[in-house]
Length: 334
Image (cartoon, rainbow, N blue to C red; front, top):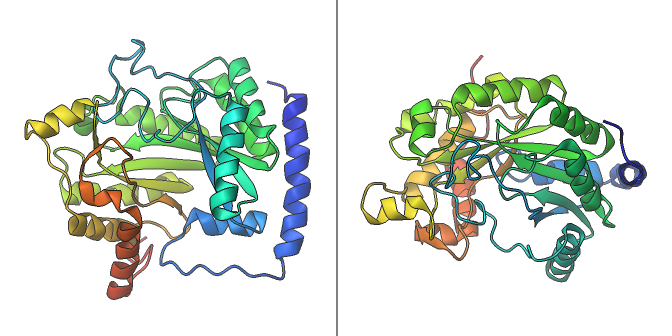
């Protein structure tokens, strides 16, 4: 797969910008006040300033919805895709990014951005179509990188080769949904693939040197605390570069919502989740970047309602690690 003119332009812009920003930031050391390794500090180190993600809906679907693997999707996923609220999906990709930039500049005086292709499976198309979409995102001024979210069963060889080119030509992350390493859980949440598919995808992605962030959901039905806390050791051994830790949210319009209303599933209480996240972090290698520790569920949130106060939860995680006197990796053993 050859790199397009647009991609090379983005590559040149990114490389020259990286050089200038690194020179500027060389005399401004960054300090991480957290007891874990947040991706925000890595972006400051690379770009010399805070970089904001802008979520983009590129119009993809999912093999777990279109009948290739299943229909209806995962039990926690809404019709618009999991975690996809707040996206101006009626606009073009470039339009969504420009709109997102305006919001970020107004709210945070932001200067640089990463395009985050979030809803559904953003590698689920022929490589030529993927390249047009990715290039459009990278052509927007001040967009300095790309994040692509997908599933383990949407990474054929040609697509991986294309992703490897973007890894070489811009600041690139691939986000891969694992959710759980347990096959019985994957079947229960109707994931549409097993743990072997995930492990194979990780092996093939890391063989190409692509930055890989894995999604994990805590509080999935039927999983014990011990089972959830076995996941960090697996991720350590796989050599992943980043982790997104999600709280199981119950959202309107999902199969999970019906299960919750019938009393078939429960959700984690705040104190329980805070302790679980801290235990998880203590078992995770310090080199692994933390992309997320929780979410707020958006306007369709049914439960747990305490999670709507996202920053309170994040502050509580900081406070608990401080109280314990521990940090990410404190309990990692050889």
